[in-house]
Length: 196
Image (cartoon, rainbow, N blue to C red; front, side, top):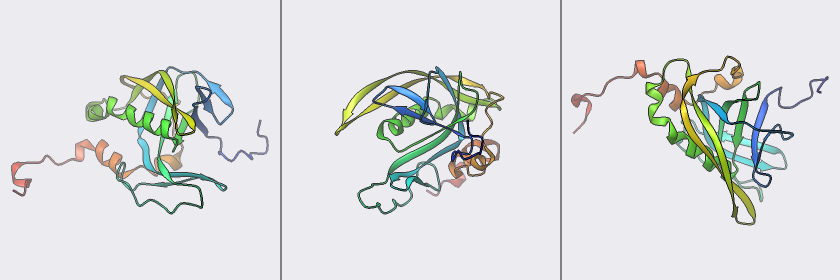
């Protein structure tokens, strides 16, 4: 209980997959089991992440997937590619932020996107891609372990009423996602538009 409101997360829940335990954790303390997750694609960010003596830090790409310049490393601490996304998990009553630069989590989230990405334009309004967590494989990378976290695409399902992303997250949508979801404002390309 945080009576004084000193919780630095501001009441937000942060999701993490711990490879050594093979478990999902929220706020580094609660082990959770879930099967399905809804993905708010308007909140997906790509960029650079680092963990140093000062804690976690991120620099996000201006456009999703188009790498901004890599920041200078901080001593022995190195910047790595990172992602951020808001999710809603079955069996959990608030949205969670999955944000990581860990190799296994980054690769696993990257593998989720092709499951539905090309169908986003056809999704019904008010629905979100929903995927099913099907397990994980743990394998060695360097001196440590990482995981291949596996998911299957279920369908575009109506957004859960409880899935309300904090205002500060919605205000910072990556430009590529905003453009992609505004399909009704897109101009159809004709032969006259092609320069050759």
